[in-house]
Length: 200
Image (cartoon, rainbow, N blue to C red; front, side, top):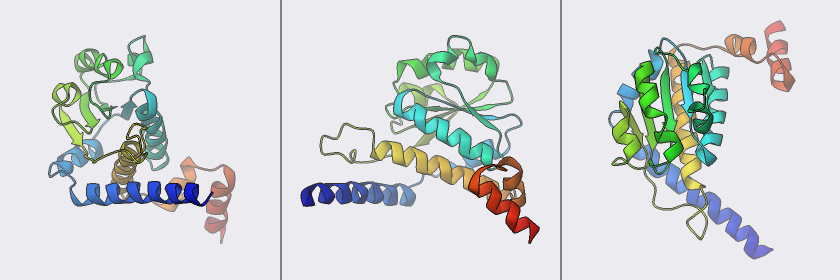
């Protein structure tokens, strides 16, 4: 069990080190992407499949709770009718670590016809996804956290961290308050805590 604990700790270290590198090397055009998202007149739409899709669902929930209207549209369902959820004023963020996920790429032609702004969220700057979108949110990492370098671990945590950071940055830029948060999150222990603090 000692060896197992060692592996667990090393996995966390691997991910922490990768995030530190990402933080130090955020691309110079991040400001432009922040402006695009902040100035969105519609909603932020996240779309992906697999682990990237799970990250997209979480990010849509985070953005919504911070006062940034957002939804998740599964890329496979998108090409079977769910593209109707997307409007011309929306900013669509397509998530794919490889940038070559066929289900994600298949949504691009229709989204362009709809007129939405497209942002590629990928680790491959020369990928089909990056070339197919208006803006590119590129991250890099050396390897996944597992010894096989296969499981989406480091890549997923980086995608989640960058996405969360953008949401937090925009919400603070818009002077989003605890009162605003309570409006969107009245339930659960967090909602009760916010209600109590407002009544004091």
